[in-house]
Every structure is written in structure tokens, then in C-alpha cells.
Amino acid sequence: MLAWQPGSTIRLDPRGGGFVVDPSRPEGSAPSFASDPPPVRPHLDDSAFTGVVYTIEGLAVSGWESFFTVIGEAVNGPGGYFGRSLDGLADCLNGGFGTPEQQFAFEWMRSAASRRQLGYAEAVRLLNRQPTSRERRARLLDAEWMRGPTPFDWIVSVFDSEKVPLRLS
Image (tube, rainbow, N blue to C red; front, side, top):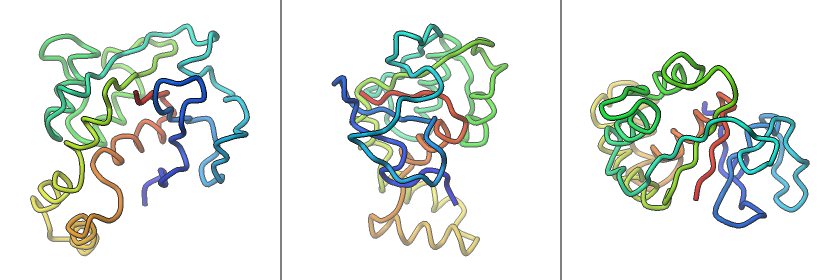
């Protein structure tokens, strides 16, 4: 089961400019968009955040594989690596793959374009690669019926579970 639940970690940024994934809220706590307490960790938009911010260009994401190319190049330059799967992304977000030891965050520019490319059709394509397990078949059926999380949601959940700030704009 994914740690991310719809609405539990993405909220409208009260300062404008899009949506924010707030990794500081305890897992399983109910969202309260109007009265969330300030995050314990410095948030990407806080003046206290002094770390590096990597930009993911949403218009360059045309599917699953291209997301990993785009984030790899955002962190490590042309041809850069930053995972090729959700597990690989989680490993990279924990450091040692081009990110600094100190604070770092990501801003996903034009994320709505990526959300469309990483939607249910992409979920069906990915899940059809290995539809052998009962869980995968259930997820495939959900994706075919446009239910449940999409690949975009899977990616956002990794940032949330690894407690790396991500701003969707």
C-alpha cells in the first residue's frame, strides 16, 4: 500500500503558484487545507529553506521513462542518472546520487502537463508489462477503469515517503 493517499499530502499553496507536497505531516493524519500547522522541516517556499532546488520541466515528461531522464538531467546534467524505477528514485532521494548532503528540494514546473502524460493510459501501459500477480492485475483493472493512483501519483508518493520537499506548479 502506498503511503500517499489522495488529498493527504498535496495541498494548494496558500502563497499562490500551484500545489505543495508537505512531507512533514504525519502519515495517516487527515488533511486540513486551511489550518495545517507550519511544517517542522523547512519548506521549499519558506525563507528558512536554504538548500538546493532542482527543477523538473513538466513539458519534457512524455511518459514514465522520460520522467527519469528529465529528473536525472535536472540533478546530474545531460545523460544524468536519478533512478529508473520507484525504488531507484527512493534510493536517489536518500542521497549519494548527485544531491548535496544538506537540504535539497524539487520544483516540478508545469506539473499538470506531466500529470496528463503520467495518467491512467500510462498506468495501463506499465502494468501490462507484467500483469502476472494478483495485485498487478487488480491495479491494471483499476487503471483501465480510471480509478486509483496514476504513475504521477506513484512518483509524488515517493517524494512524500522519503520526506523530500516537492512543489508542483
